[in-house]
Length: 477
Ligand code: GLU
Image 1 (cartoon, rainbow, N blue to C red):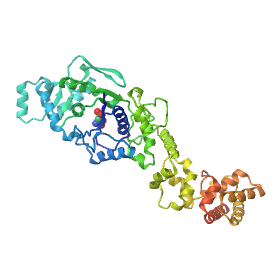
Image 2 (spheres, rainbow, N blue to C red):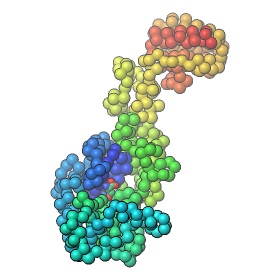
Image 3 (cartoon, helix red, strand yellow):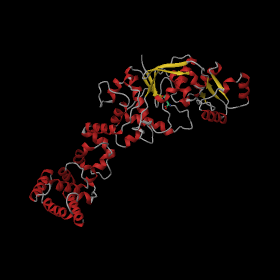
Image 4 (tube, helix red, strand yellow):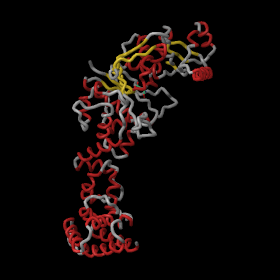
């Protein structure tokens, strides 16, 4: 069987990492059977609609390397793929179901509904529509409609019995229909609700596997009833686990960064982000941690999806990103780094500087912080400079160092090292103190790439100037 899957984002905000996560599973499952992965835009909630949100999804897909077969910016045999352009389709089915008695008009005012909810809350009874308008006679309905009263269409849910499905991830799921209220299917503005549109579209678009978040499990009964009333075969449902923050709460904008494009800006590689997110709630059959998108698409399967909510652990993402950065060829790393190099980065020294810091890059954006001291005079903190010796000794050491280094002819790491070591030995300086003090004087920091290579790249003139300022600092202390 050719699988047809879909992602159905609502463009109401940023392009969410959860959307990319689900899409990758959809895409892989479809591709394995030469089926189709469809992008359907669920844009019927006009109050929450944001036009740029949709284009951001496409930008995010492009950056991550996610492609699809139908819908989105493409077309396809089931166009249109925007729900807002399919209103007449929903309307037709709504009319049919209303005529058949499966949907009924509800004229309850928002005031009445609020009062009902308040009472339910006060009495501790389960929330949900109390079914008042179910009892309206045909005459009353016609009279209300003729009077121009606004109404919604609700799903007539059986008051007893159970409904169940075999979830591809969770196995058998059953609901007692007595606890399911009559949900709104068509709003008073004529727009369908999610429940209604999703069923019509998944069927018409011949979707075979519906992957969606665990938060939609409770909607299952409503959807299955619609399939039953329409006499359609339901698709296979797979409710994916909810991605969580480290504290187990639902992954939210506040706690974690969920915007795909923000990871681009922060210097993550798309292949690292993809690798990281597909491991949320899923494991590679051979237990691999690092693998390509192509490999994932081939081996993904729903039986390896877990039901407990995976943790969005950005520390792991950082680790992975570092792994991916270090696996890039020199040329590839250069291409990726260019947008992150600060304006004053000395491009002519690129090949001297970058190999010295590559090992320490967690993100591409780290390049500025890790290289700035090569081309900007650093701030030298006196406490670091004088950490292991007092001002007069350090000033004395620096004075001798300046004289020694001034005499170096060929400014190369090996020669610089030889001179500095011999100076240290002659005066019997404490090794750790002496070398760390030089490192701080030259770079402003205790953590830098190898000292002598670094000094070579910074250049004789600049090194001597930095040592002189450090000497003044030590003297003044
Ligand atoms: N528009 C829904 C969402 O954004 C789609 C849910 C589904 O996949 O059915 O969550």
